[in-house]
Amino acid sequence: MSVAQVATIVRTRRRSRLSHLGVIGWLALAVIVVFMFVAAFGEALAPYDPNAIDIAYSNVGPIPGHPLGFDELGRDLLSRLLVGARSSFVGPLALVALSTVAGTTLALIAAWRRGWTDATLSAGFDIAFAFPGILLAILLATLFGAGMAVAVIALTLAYTPALGRLLRATALRETGMEYVKAFRVMGYSDFRIVVRHVLPNLMPFIIAQAIVMFGYATLDLGGLSFLGLGVQPPTADWGVMVAAGAPALLQGYPMQTLAAGTCLVLAAVAFGVLGDRLARMWGVE
Image (cartoon, rainbow, N blue to C red; front, side, top):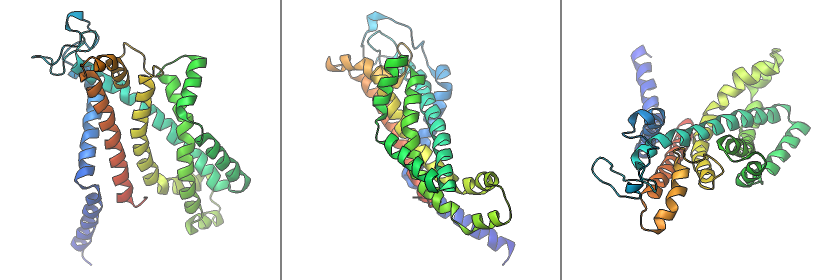
């Protein structure tokens, strides 16, 4: 087989895999890229000071120069929406990073050690998974005060066992493969086998789950901010904006709640769709 034929086969397989994303998958990726860009450069993109108050424009609808209108304090909604993207994504990013590292580590320990270690960690996963994260967040907020750090820690304790349970089954199958037994016979250390060989083979599953988890984290942290347990006013944040706009919504001024709520839902759906499509593409469903 010629080099040209091999290259053609590789390109065909690559296109075949990328086709699993489909139109919806690429659209979800585009939405995520836009949101990440806004989160990174929202302050520079904002046309006005997001915290500038002008009561004369309280709950005024769209006018020239202010396409989304104003909130209950007369602050420009578009500016707050753009700036609020950062706090709305920084929390989920920290949450997913902490949960992924902790859940992966515990799952690998359970799968590698097996026996009583696996039984103990699996029981711990089941017990922790049954405890709602929002109740833990309320408890920690009562003890340490409300804030994004407390909300992230609380949900990390709730997300870690969920990922650990999912990854444990895949890790058990991977650690039972013949190549792992061969490396053990060759005298490789446990750490080297797990970190350099088992973990890379689990990365597609871990990445897909982390992306899906990011969508859930966006909604959950937005919900905690809505309840006053996450980001605190006057910081621009989508969850805070949904809560702040609720009274105006009942008075016939829905723009703030609808705009921020739509962004939260759209972000959660986009991450969920992309994670699902990547799982199909990598064959880790």
